[in-house]
Length: 258
Image 1 (cartoon, rainbow, N blue to C red):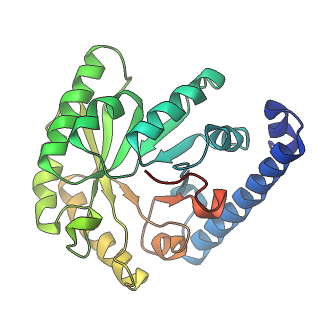
Image 2 (cartoon, one colour):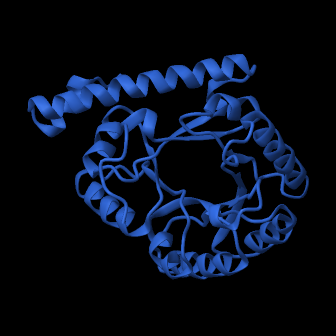
């Protein structure tokens, strides 16, 4: 297993750098322990739930530290930041097993850029965005710029607040069918963030039920992206297959949001 000492060799031996490596190693161990415990409590195998470290707002060096500690998938939420960070990361790491996920709101005019680097996008919530992503991903596939269709998770609004993103529950069947019929896309499941101040168990139970219903028509769409630092245990209890964790791994945001 890679240790802080091993990871530190990639970054020199400066005290500050080694401290950061050690902090992230300890945090990663604690999050993995929480996730394992949540799976045991839910009667599930740990292999059923993946950990997606969220590196948005953090420097590329933190992603490389996580890579050296064994992580191969990373979540980003801002296209411009992600595109620059991934380009820098790929100058140092050429491992083809590394996968980048787009988990934040995406404007249609950013679809082409994201289609070049994203393995999956968790935040699709409109017909127009599906159309833009489908065209961009199909073009990238034809040009040999991506190896496979872009995996799509539809973001569900559990509170009906358009400011927080997500498709209305009533629109999900239509959006799933649109994704499935797009040559450059592959429908893989759902994502949601619980409403503010909501009971997380109730929210994730509702999400689980919506997901189960959609799976009857789309049996291969098995992915449920749910749970973050403060509620991952609740999400695992209700069927999450991917928890998106940033703060518990990397701390508070070091970069001011623009």
